[in-house]
Image (cartoon, rainbow, N blue to C red):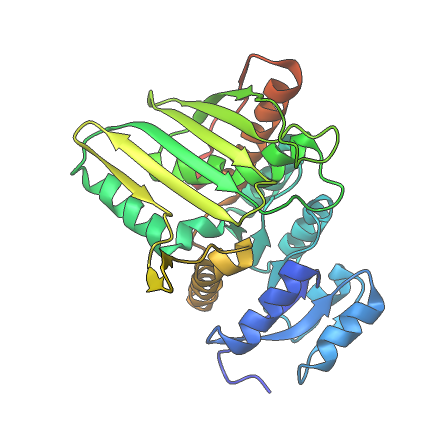
Length: 339
């Protein structure tokens, strides 16, 4: 049974990400436990719930959110299902940690934003976990300190071993570069106003018809220029790196050289093979921060505005990819709730 004050969480979606969050809440996070799991696959939901005392499986998110033993919701279902789940959570006045994307497009994200505004307070933390990564936190603190002066350029590299089955060219923008969109906005404190996508000759390792790699350029409203190398079939590992070039110096993270070994005539280290490995600590920090804030009656971290802005930048990125040239980002005025 849950201890007094323990946050009782319903996890919606028990695929790879959702199952990892169930494991995290039960085994790593303090102050919370999973009391409900939801999946359209009833057998999968039952299998996950069976390993947790006092956890009920559901196939309908609304039924789980109406349960007396649910205080909060973690949404890890596919993006197209997020809007309905979020609006249901709002109807029950439940705090939510919603995995990215907030929703798959700017129009639906704007509807969620307007619905949350009507509540008069924030209810949602969006799952942009890089904001909780130790290296990114150090880079953010350094940039905010002003020691390096004004940021002029920001270079990102984002590489995956191989793309998942069924991936298409636009998904490199919507599902991968979306992380750089959010972390750029967060690091610089600026909005992205335009996107350009350059298309190198595709790698021989890319599936037929996929434009991989891509070189994406952001222009911000603060005058910074940001580039992203996205390469989702690099073959050798998962790498996420960033370098800020400022007026009085530079700072780089993501080299992955925490430990270097020397043995048998060779030196080197290891390269993470997927995002759950590289960002395990960030996910732990993210969920713990959500639980702690929720138990205090607060909502912190990336907001619905951040989810909406990322969706709008993603749409501009896809236009730039498909039509060529530079695509401007279309954003509504930022509401007072998110300032």
